[in-house]
Amino acid sequence: ASPPITTPSCPAETALAQYLKDSGPSIYSAGWCPHCHEQKQAFGAAAVALLPNVECDPEGVNPQTDLCRSKSGVTGFPTLEINGEFYPGAQPLQRLAELSGYTGPTNFLR
Image (tube, rainbow, N blue to C red; front, top):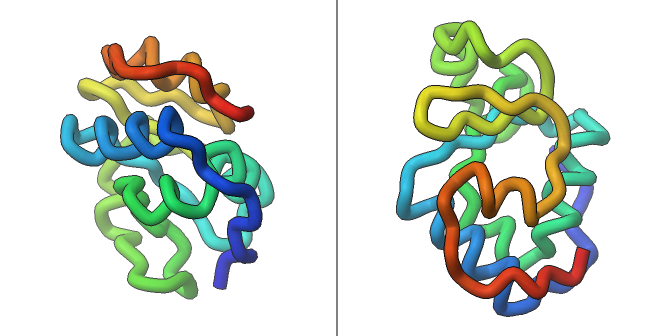
């Protein structure tokens, strides 16, 4: 199981997470991955619950390993897929907003 997310979410993080959920990007991750945890901590607990997370570790919770293997752009964790493009590594929330076309509030806490 992944470590708990201990940071709070502000309205901007929650709005970005909702936008990502609604617009289709996927975040490919593994429960044991420290960079995945770092990315989730940046969003905060409330926003993480909204994120479209795909668990790639076969030992993880609700794994989707076949989907992960079918994505040639997923070469490490976390990887964000936006409009068929893959962005590896933990990304600043501002960058995720720009990459995804999000235009809501950007006064992110982290």
